[in-house]
Length: 431
Image (cartoon, rainbow, N blue to C red; front, side, top):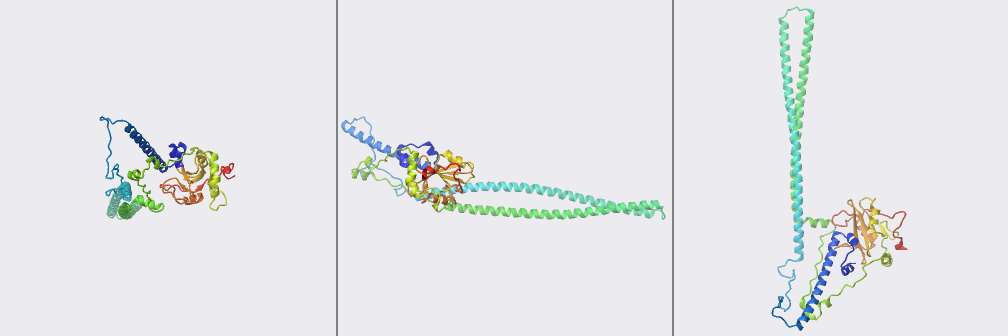
């Protein structure tokens, strides 16, 4: 499929829409390499034609020429990055890039957490200030009420003593009515005094409770400060560990092993080897065989029956029945229509209507995602760099039930989307 695209230098827009960002970058990189190769071939032919023309024409004195720098081997001097003694190795450059990204990520996360902690502490300080002010106001009112009650009790006691003195200085034998009024008055004074004593005791009790509440509030505030300090220390320690290890490498290890780097590109052969062998540059490069870019439905059905059906593609791991997630040659819109009523995490695998391969359609919380599955070799894997190879489609699905498809870590194949009751869309593939 890749050779076919490079030969035509054209990508179907619908096929391009089914590729992820990483797959698009790889495809564009390969197309750029093919363009450079073709340009070099044209330049070589053009130089050869100019040499033939100059050999038949006399050179003019006013003509402008370009002279290339010649090396010790009397060939054009070429510098290849990485071969010089002072050039950094590929592994060192990759490690520096990863360490720099990890440092920036750690600094960014540290800044975000610092801002969040600062906002939380400001909110706690404001709430504590309001609570303290309200408690102070309550305490002040209680103290005022206590003083007022004490003053009332003192006044009542003085009044009672004065009335008793008056009663002693009165006539020794007052009338019965006057005695009854005096007793009623005394009883009223006594009840008022008793009520004042109760208010005084109540205020003392409330004052004790307020002191206990204030003590608990101060203890809770001290615990919060201690927890905040411990959180800052833990975060500083974890940040330093993340900078040393590299958060990028740590995330890659969590998704299945150590960080994998793309293989080193092959070093180009020197020009002297080409010239000494006597082989033309255009003759050394093998041309890519052009094939028909159109892939009809009949060709896809024939490919599936001849190559994929003997491998039990689309069957369950036991090999006894068709898997519920397998679908036939359906379009992108049809697959999305099947998943529109499903929950996030639902998926299906369909035979592509554009190429000889498969497409995994996934329903996420934000919409739909489509991943191309390469079936050109004897194994199955997602199109991209350093993808795991699986023997069958069922093994690929079983693996990604617990492992995400991309580095985001959200695409888990949880709920397979089966066939509709009124139509089985893969019947033409297994007849």
